[in-house]
Image (tube, rainbow, N blue to C red; front, side, top):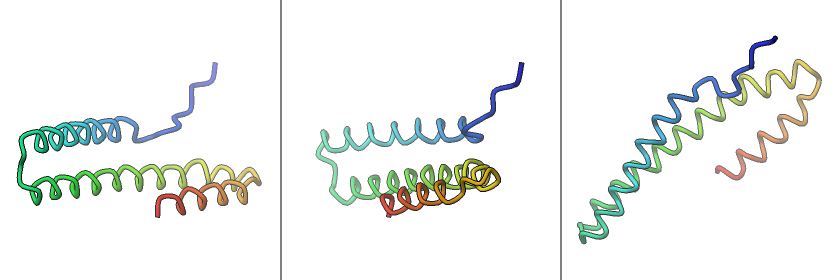
Amino acid sequence: MEAKKTVQPNKQQMLNRLKRIEGQVRGIHNMIENDRYCVDVLTQISAIQAAINKVSLGLVEDHTRHCVANAIKNDNGEKAIDELMDVMKKML
């Protein structure tokens, strides 16, 4: 029996980062409930945006290095590149 190929090689690292982001979002929720200073809330939102961007870039890199590279090797590169570019346009 063939071993299952890992689709997401950095899965645990990303899950850990997402758990931290969840905690940060809950923290912002509490800050707003407790009428914290707007600048403090905005600073935390900025930190979450940066963390989400890191997750996104990590996924893009893994996808490019594995899925797109494999598609190119298997003569399906144009479709994979088009898909990647569509996602990048949405992200930006």
